Length: 110
Image (cartoon, rainbow, N blue to C red):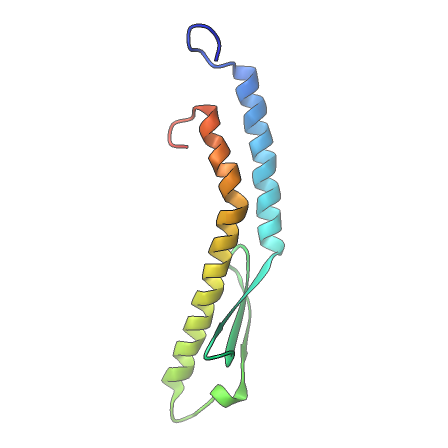
Protein backbone atom coordinates (compact mmCIF):
# COMPACT_ATOMS: atom_id res chain seq x y z
CA UNK A 1 0.00 0.00 0.00
CA UNK A 2 1.07 3.50 -0.70
CA UNK A 3 1.02 6.28 1.85
CA UNK A 4 -2.53 7.34 2.49
CA UNK A 5 -3.86 3.79 2.14
CA UNK A 6 -4.25 3.85 -1.67
CA UNK A 7 -3.22 0.61 -3.39
CA UNK A 8 -0.81 0.77 -6.30
CA UNK A 9 -3.12 0.29 -9.30
CA UNK A 10 -0.36 -0.90 -11.61
CA UNK A 11 0.64 -3.59 -9.14
CA UNK A 12 -3.00 -4.61 -8.66
CA UNK A 13 -3.45 -4.94 -12.41
CA UNK A 14 -0.29 -7.08 -12.66
CA UNK A 15 -1.57 -9.34 -9.88
CA UNK A 16 -4.99 -9.61 -11.54
CA UNK A 17 -3.39 -10.51 -14.89
CA UNK A 18 -1.21 -13.16 -13.24
CA UNK A 19 -4.24 -14.67 -11.49
CA UNK A 20 -6.20 -14.64 -14.73
CA UNK A 21 -3.41 -16.70 -16.34
CA UNK A 22 -3.37 -19.08 -13.37
CA UNK A 23 -7.14 -19.51 -13.57
CA UNK A 24 -6.98 -20.21 -17.31
CA UNK A 25 -4.25 -22.81 -16.75
CA UNK A 26 -6.21 -24.49 -13.93
CA UNK A 27 -9.39 -24.55 -16.05
CA UNK A 28 -7.50 -26.14 -18.95
CA UNK A 29 -6.06 -28.79 -16.64
CA UNK A 30 -9.53 -29.50 -15.24
CA UNK A 31 -11.03 -29.83 -18.71
CA UNK A 32 -8.38 -32.43 -19.63
CA UNK A 33 -8.62 -34.39 -16.38
CA UNK A 34 -10.74 -37.52 -16.23
CA UNK A 35 -11.99 -38.81 -12.90
CA UNK A 36 -13.65 -42.12 -12.18
CA UNK A 37 -16.30 -43.07 -9.67
CA UNK A 38 -17.51 -46.56 -8.89
CA UNK A 39 -20.40 -48.21 -7.13
CA UNK A 40 -21.39 -51.73 -6.23
CA UNK A 41 -17.83 -52.87 -5.78
CA UNK A 42 -16.96 -51.88 -9.34
CA UNK A 43 -20.16 -53.12 -11.00
CA UNK A 44 -20.79 -49.60 -12.29
CA UNK A 45 -18.05 -47.15 -13.25
CA UNK A 46 -18.61 -43.53 -14.27
CA UNK A 47 -15.98 -41.28 -15.81
CA UNK A 48 -16.31 -37.49 -15.80
CA UNK A 49 -14.08 -34.62 -16.85
CA UNK A 50 -12.68 -32.27 -14.24
CA UNK A 51 -15.31 -29.81 -15.46
CA UNK A 52 -18.04 -32.33 -14.58
CA UNK A 53 -18.89 -33.48 -18.11
CA UNK A 54 -19.96 -37.15 -18.17
CA UNK A 55 -17.54 -39.06 -20.41
CA UNK A 56 -18.66 -42.67 -19.99
CA UNK A 57 -20.62 -45.20 -17.97
CA UNK A 58 -19.51 -48.84 -17.77
CA UNK A 59 -21.89 -51.48 -16.40
CA UNK A 60 -20.74 -54.98 -15.58
CA UNK A 61 -23.24 -57.49 -17.03
CA UNK A 62 -23.55 -59.01 -13.53
CA UNK A 63 -25.29 -55.79 -12.45
CA UNK A 64 -28.06 -56.24 -15.03
CA UNK A 65 -31.09 -57.95 -13.54
CA UNK A 66 -34.33 -57.37 -15.46
CA UNK A 67 -36.22 -58.11 -12.24
CA UNK A 68 -34.36 -55.40 -10.31
CA UNK A 69 -33.74 -52.37 -12.50
CA UNK A 70 -33.97 -50.02 -9.49
CA UNK A 71 -30.72 -51.35 -7.99
CA UNK A 72 -28.89 -50.76 -11.27
CA UNK A 73 -30.31 -47.24 -11.46
CA UNK A 74 -29.13 -46.57 -7.90
CA UNK A 75 -25.66 -47.90 -8.74
CA UNK A 76 -25.40 -45.60 -11.77
CA UNK A 77 -26.42 -42.59 -9.67
CA UNK A 78 -23.96 -43.57 -6.93
CA UNK A 79 -21.09 -43.98 -9.43
CA UNK A 80 -21.88 -40.59 -10.99
CA UNK A 81 -22.02 -38.99 -7.56
CA UNK A 82 -18.68 -40.57 -6.64
CA UNK A 83 -17.07 -39.27 -9.86
CA UNK A 84 -18.60 -35.80 -9.35
CA UNK A 85 -17.13 -35.65 -5.84
CA UNK A 86 -13.71 -36.53 -7.25
CA UNK A 87 -14.10 -33.74 -9.82
CA UNK A 88 -15.14 -31.30 -7.08
CA UNK A 89 -12.09 -32.20 -4.99
CA UNK A 90 -9.79 -31.74 -7.99
CA UNK A 91 -11.40 -28.38 -8.76
CA UNK A 92 -10.86 -27.22 -5.18
CA UNK A 93 -7.25 -28.41 -5.33
CA UNK A 94 -6.54 -26.65 -8.65
CA UNK A 95 -8.56 -23.48 -8.10
CA UNK A 96 -8.14 -23.07 -4.33
CA UNK A 97 -4.66 -21.53 -4.44
CA UNK A 98 -5.74 -19.15 -7.21
CA UNK A 99 -8.92 -18.07 -5.42
CA UNK A 100 -6.94 -17.62 -2.19
CA UNK A 101 -4.67 -15.18 -3.99
CA UNK A 102 -7.58 -12.92 -4.87
CA UNK A 103 -7.80 -11.75 -1.28
CA UNK A 104 -4.44 -10.06 -1.76
CA UNK A 105 -5.98 -7.69 -4.28
CA UNK A 106 -8.24 -6.13 -1.71
CA UNK A 107 -11.28 -6.85 -3.88
CA UNK A 108 -14.59 -7.09 -2.04
CA UNK A 109 -16.05 -10.56 -1.96
CA UNK A 110 -12.75 -12.35 -2.65
